[in-house]
Length: 321
Image (cartoon, rainbow, N blue to C red; front, side, top):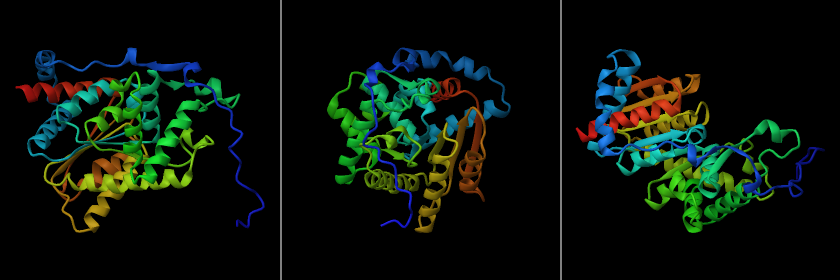
């Protein structure tokens, strides 16, 4: 029994609304389209025309690292925030996954939420400003109820958040599942881990939330993620795309656990893609893990909706050469 006079708030009276009734900023109609093999070959001249200076060469180096990792059958892990989904990149990423340039995905809680809403409704990204004043922000019924139910069920079955939500989506056969990373990765048995910070995501403010299940499932995903990071040794690639805090911190802890347990973690590549270069990605992804000759890190600054399709084009065109 707590000694505090104040008591935790009761969420049982929370009011929700149907997801279908909520205006959203992003729909699948706006999503990117992956390149066909013929189109990928056609962009070779454009890529070759880029200067051999600074970021252009860094992009080439990261593309070469991805090709090398695939050839050596080493891990290629994409760590990402929700903004990657909101900028319509799921089709590009799923194409890379099917081509073997993604062997695992790690995302924060917002990534799970946006991906789920895309799968179920075909849209995501509510207007926070318009909903916050009335207390409606984050209160879509299906988002809170179905995700929390999936996580509780998954925790009981000893599954992580990523696997639990992917399994639920495949079972429900949502109308836009083909655009969902969680849905398609689970169907193809590509691991997805989700790393939650309790209190930061809208599903935590719903009455269906269970802190014990959220913690257990996310902790299981951390341990699974650490096993995946171990597979970077000897030529793997870790990409941090659009996560300024959560994924860089999780990655750094995974790196130290792998090494603490006596596993080799050398000769791998890291890269950070973001609109701005923040302290944690630069320090925890680009510099520290590959220090002292353990590998090489890259920083590429720019809009995800431009940089990731450009990277994908470089990788695919070179793989077809």
